[in-house]
Length: 392
Image (tube, rainbow, N blue to C red; front, side, top):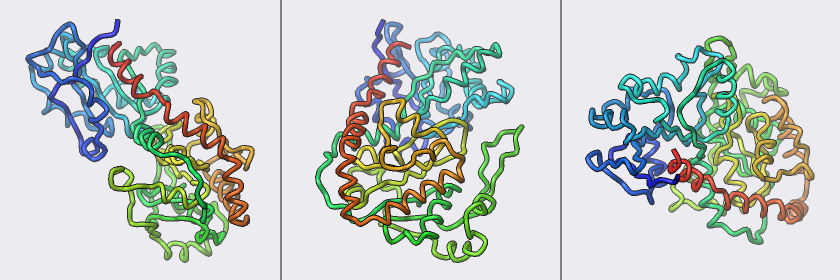
């Protein structure tokens, strides 16, 4: 039975919620207050949080009256963690020590049943993890709904942007200002080493020797930037010169796409042929696609995906088409180092072509690009979110 849903006017919102306007996903849902809760409706206490690591910060928001309503089921916790992927279950850790268990414990400690809690998360990887836990006799009783807010932003762009004739003047775009990651530094290094930077729109952070890890207690998977970069040709001899050219700034609008009302990226996308999406990696196992990839689809451009292994396969599984008829997409199944090398070789080959040939290639790709934008425009994740909440 489909129920009427309402949102409690008391919410927990972190700074990311305010910056991205996450609350807008519930703009058409009526609000209620703690004194007006009805057993005939499903009422949610919404917790907007970027990560699952600090559940104690929520406690000051919750009154005893709210706990009482959550115990009875007239109010349900709704944990919205829709902007980034985090490993909630860490299935090789003891279950009681994983972030899922630690987070919901603040409710269970006050007598709130686990099955009254709903999570909204942006990725699909939890499904396999829950199945694995079930084989160990562990029953995860919270409800999960998949909703990717980064995709949500780009759906709006896709609906507003019409693919049209335009002159391409650059061969590629690769923007890597923002969070420093191994795959981003190595991608820019390979483009620089092959003398391709002038052929594209490029940005990169100041070089940092960071350590990336999934943070598992049982596995030492720490990799420094220096050790990662040592796998690329001539790094020992050219690293100093490369570091000296950084940072590289493109237009001074780093992350301005969050504010779509004031920043139009269409000129950026129309200026260049292929978009190199350098996703954030190695926070967790699994595949996570963000706006870094979806924006190319929204603006009708081909893309090379420097992200998690199997990312292209995942996109194809949800209806998108990729570009194996135009270049070697075997990089999708390779390790992080070989993936960067293969992508850089693809870009090198593209940059050897005259810009007229590039424009011609783009026109041949239009059926794929139009198909992909249509798939994104017609995505039903928001409708599915609301339906999921109505049927909780």
